[in-house]
Image (cartoon, rainbow, N blue to C red; front, side):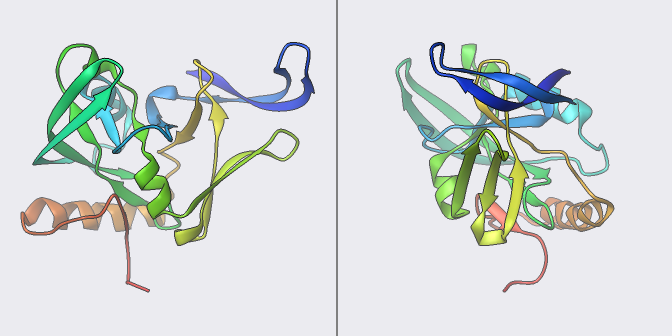
Length: 193
């Protein structure tokens, strides 16, 4: 675990902020906001670390799906997605990242893509005085952000309430039963609006 920082006053000479307060955040249970990512994705090693600390009763469901990614390192591919229950949204959500399983891509962080952000009608609030947050307008939900070890914006995925746990457990059981059900990048758990 490491500390997540809320920033105070900027020091423009060095383009950094001084720390005002901190709290412990387990980086293994967080995702990175990546506006350059074409699809939500995660490395298999990163996913394994997340699942090791995630509530076991929620589980994860894998689905075969082929995805190719272009990057500065060439083309990477993924042959499956993981349906991962998270605390994003008022009632929780199931994210479907493509899973990288080869070479260096196994270590890729959990990346929230720009299509995911667009679908959720996301607004980034990067006000050092008020704190960093991500508002998912589609779900009228705000989640805290922090700066991770590399300076990337990080989102906690495990701030699960008992109500979320109940709904997500039910949804994951249903998802495990059916092959035909197709979930979107961030599906709402509960009645449709």
